[in-house]
Length: 114
Image 1 (spheres, rainbow, N blue to C red):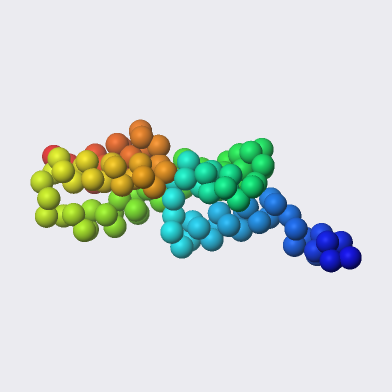
Image 2 (cartoon, rainbow, N blue to C red; image 1 turned 90 degrees about the vertical axis):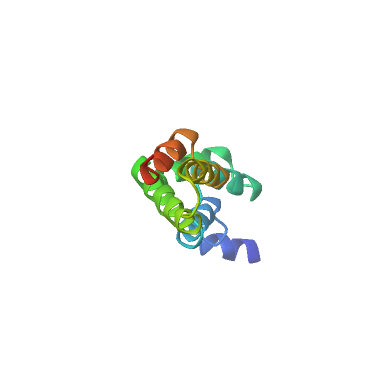
């Protein structure tokens, strides 16, 4: 009866759980698409569901905006370093957070103009 109640009230829905988890994570501690995918896989969400959700939540503009905000935060902490070191640290930081390499390079170059 407990399972029937939970399903009836849509409390046992993997897709809704995954969407909620992604939305919360994007607000509290944003990460790139790759990291979010790994997080959802660890939670046992099916790959097809993950792809659908990530397609909805991670538009190229949204991901670029998130990466830029994250890079700006990092830039403030490393502003005293030489330009090349700043670019490298920002690039590596974005990669660790799950952003694509091409986007990480673009954002690092955009923030640190040599």
